[in-house]
Image (cartoon, rainbow, N blue to C red; front, side, top):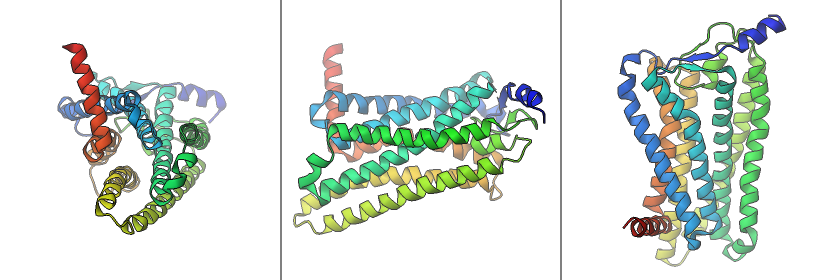
Length: 317
């Protein structure tokens, strides 16, 4: 394909299908997604405000939790409003650039979240296994630097992928059988060989997720060994409760991500609408559940939120 034809084709917008085969039910399907988005906005905003206003939460662990809350807000807002537009208004059109910007945000902040989860495991490892060094090892400035490093790492590896994807000509069809610009669904529309971008994305995903998950597993293995050696049962339970909260979030992130990825790669005989719904739920359920997990399992976050609600009640009364 000539350069002019390629640029003309790539200037055309894509069309999002929504949930293939369930278009007549879009209005009903939108209800749980709208509810989850509202809960995501409220829950993560409350966590951020609680950490910001409660000075007792000005510690590295809560800064990392704040980072996760910001990631969840960006992650959801990059996807759900457009998804609801498709469901409610049949606003299926999405510009070529907008589609890849949305994809960039999804991939980048997935990688950022993986980096933050790794940092949280390191935080708990130092706090439990080397408590005397905790205050000097993880200062507030160093915590912020770790967050920025996670963002830089993610953007650095995802930018070349977006360059590879946007350089492909998309001339088969403009219809994406999905409710957002899902990577593999978009690549299938290319009329050139996408093997280079496929190989790059596979290598990056394997290295990022593989490396992070190995270090996370090692950190929590060492933590578990140290916790079991603590003499006081109350101290063991407190440490396990905090780490259990983190492990719940990690499992939700990695297991959900792997399930969604494999269902997009291999249909396993499932209907297309099932594959799309699983991918949609992966992008909307964890951001909603993360602040609930903090609130249920972490007493300090609970108290911070209750203090915040008390202040709001005094202001309104």
